[in-house]
Amino acid sequence: MEATQKQFRKRNAILTCLQGTHSHPSAEMVHQMLQEEHPDISLATVYRNLARFKNQGLIQSLGTVNGIERFDANTAPHVHFVCGSCDAVLDLPQMEVPQVLCENAAQCSGCKVDACQLMFTGTCRACLAKHETA
Image (cartoon, rainbow, N blue to C red):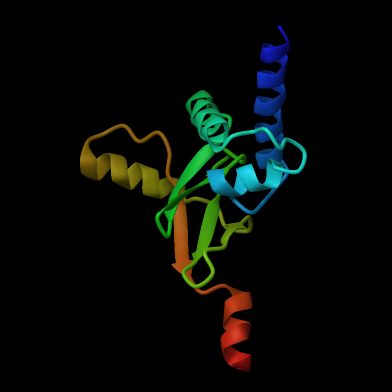
């Protein structure tokens, strides 16, 4: 019984961690964020639960940034920006995912489009400022 409670406590901590950040962390980042409060949590536990949450639709994978999968607890359609310099992933809440993209993709492919992820890449403000002062 105690092992099951420990398992649920860790699972809840992982989900709460993701829901409490806007940094779009990787599994390694989540593991690192939880280490102080849960020193016995393994990276395998984090990976396993992220996969579970993704399959349950509680989180989404943003794909890979510099070869590392990143996650978001906000599953509502929204736009992202990825900095190619520092790997930051930012939400762009003032932009909407144009529904016409899904419609055009469905029409061009003959497939049923369920969702669309829109991601811009470039250099974030902080990195631009660093390069200007250097």
